[in-house]
Image (tube, rainbow, N blue to C red; front, side, top):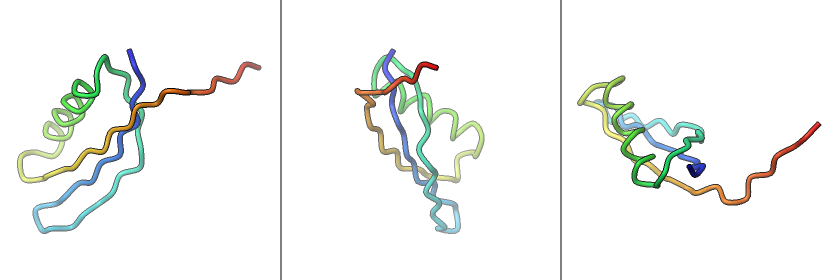
Length: 66
C-alpha cells in the first residue's frame, strides 16, 4: 500500500468552486485512490456535483518516535 495526498476541487451545480484541503489515502495504485475517492464523493453528493482530483504520491514520509 502506498500513501497518496489528494487535493480536490468540488464544483457545485450553481458553479461555485470549493478547494478541499489535502487528505491522505492509502491505496495500491494512484488509479485505485482516484476511483475510491470519486465513488465516495458521488455517493455523498450525488450526480449534480463535479470534481477535479490532484493526486501526489508521498515517497518520503517522516515518522517520529517518542
